[in-house]
View 1 (cartoon, rainbow, N blue to C red):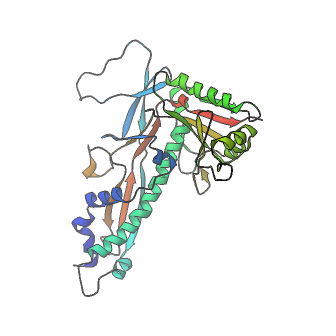
View 2: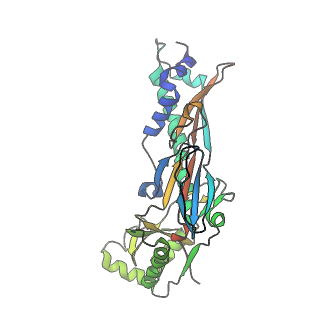
View 3: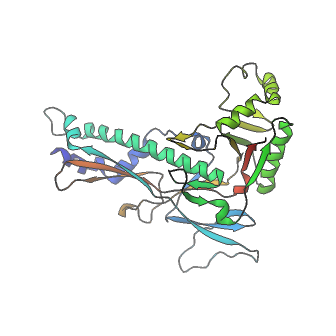
Length: 329
């Protein structure tokens, strides 16, 4: 079998490659590892989100030509959010394939597949970091493109609502202020159940909070090692788990260094929707988190390329339930 013809076997079909990239060991960011966002595949490239009194909810799909779901007389609006189309490719050159050819054998599918899997691992890591970045944006209410400045969606502008913020005075009673922060979120959530609160803190914010006298005194009684150990993974104070979020790619920080974002845990207000790929094979199917496909230099036969794509839509359905916390002067 000619070397580049190896790629045209079933081992490198869309289904096989997509299955392979989904089965690679998942290396999520912090937000992904917490399971904060529900995940769901959708069959379209966009989702309709309904707003009522500053709160957002998804509208269920209905058959074409069938009756629409009814709503009452309360004023409501709806917005269409399109999933982001994220794609990246990696080439496998003919010389690289030649280098892994099994001596005395024309069947080197497994060796070539190992090389392709290396490319898939690199590509997957890029997609995971980007999805984490979009989820951080959804928490902040501002989802930005990879340059860190171009807005994809500003949830507050889209729905005509204002962000809730709180200025934390480290010289005052931090415990009482933590309770006040939670009450702001609870007022927005209404009857929705909450199991706890977690704050994603930038470096400057976390260091200042940790050095506050009240926090230092509290840590003495929580555990004898806390004042000696690295507590960036999180410590409890005032009913909130404060953690130093580590997220930066290049020059782009996922959270501002001098801010924290307090999020309710155990709710269903965070969601990620995955639209199908723009492949013929994926039309009218439920979207998957990642897709992979091969295409070739058919003219000269010098390379094959692994194409990967994801079409995520990360949303916070109640943006005002996330509280932006800054340091007081």
